[in-house]
Length: 143
Ligand code: ZN
Image 1: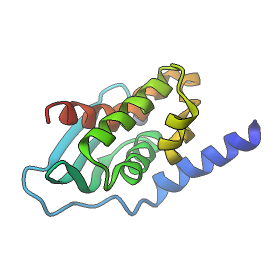
Image 2 (image 1 turned 90 degrees about the vertical axis):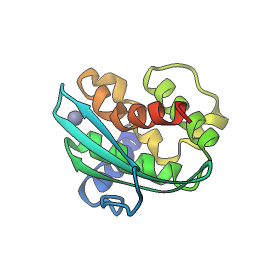
Image 3 (image 1 turned 30 degrees about the vertical axis):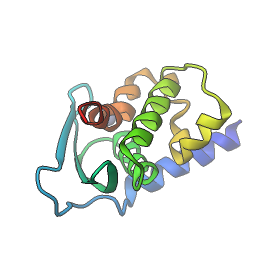
Image 4 (image 1 turned 90 degrees about the horizontal axis):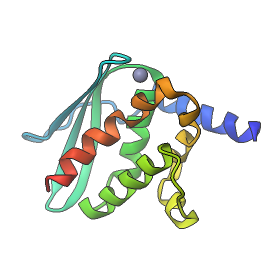
């Protein structure tokens, strides 16, 4: 168990320290802003849609290690997905954080974002982990 926790921690630290997803994107009206006043996390997602597909995504902004790494990992997981696929994966991630039952098939779709499965044990960090996912979910639901 603690070995798994170590792997998760290293995934989270790697993404927060050194994310290749942290940059602007050249696309018009493609920015989404999310703010978590509890912690001061402030993230802007840049999403380049190609019809109903997420062609590319990146982020800029500042905040704690959890919010930054959760955003970076979300981008890795969702890049290239269709809007419907992305909606499904975002919902599975939020369900996982809410400690709902998820099937092993659904867990696979989460890829590295499974690293946040124990974040519910740290209630103060839950909003940090969810910030980008909920910001994106709002946009996807409008599409
Ligand atoms: Zn935070």
